[in-house]
Length: 302
Ligand code: ADP
Image 1 (cartoon, rainbow, N blue to C red):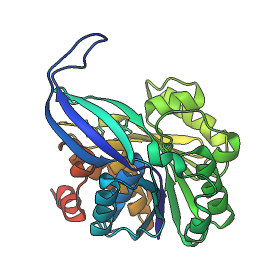
Image 2 (cartoon, rainbow, N blue to C red):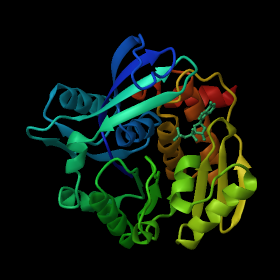
Image 3 (cartoon, rainbow, N blue to C red):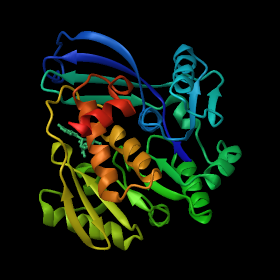
Image 4 (cartoon, rainbow, N blue to C red):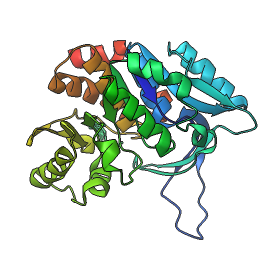
């Protein structure tokens, strides 16, 4: 079983011709409210790819929180660890997607801020019993550190997608088995600007010295830099026409763990994750863009 611990957000998405500069007013179009949040996206990706998955998170007691809970159940997610916070809104993100496919995001955590070390006390057995624990950084650090420590002591493998970018304690990094930063996050964690294979390996080496066995630096359309025990190589992604890269990294992470859970090698799990993420960038939105297992299998059979 896989346990995902993380955030839930309502994404308020607007399509824009370009990003407005300070003081500028632009006309957007296609306003939509789409289920998002890094934790929820990764949980949904794993569930749509048929992983046996439990989700530990907090939603507010508003309409969106109720709607999301229903969607998680429909996607086959075990929601015993999903908490509803009284008098608190569900987390929100204001997202602009430009016609060139880039995004610009401002978010407010709201209920996500309640996912503290105390709040997950009742979920620790689920973490101990799981094979993998997948986390991101959109919820309080005390909850993330507690979950990582419990997982480590119970031999549950910890996969950390260190997004959004921030510095992390050595104590947390020492509990992590697999880390999946993008180039920006890798730079914040290591101080190394990732521009080529050499710098990617340099950043990976710093993360290895913190006790992390497997480092995957995601490189957007180029794929990932995979490094184990100081030896790295690029694993290329798939070439597709990008419409909206929102949740590409999340789809990648959810699919990666699903592949690992099925016993795939790291390289094969990465290929599987590249396929799922490639499909997601051809579609609009966060959870609306995450493919099903059948779609990924068909893509890989092409
Ligand atoms: P993030 O979205 O977290 O910044 P990346 O941009 O590095 O992460 O993308 C994560 C993964 O998504 C990549 O490793 C790749 O598999 C896939 N991906 C992202 N952008 C594209 C793209 N333009 N074409 C194909 N695959 C992509």
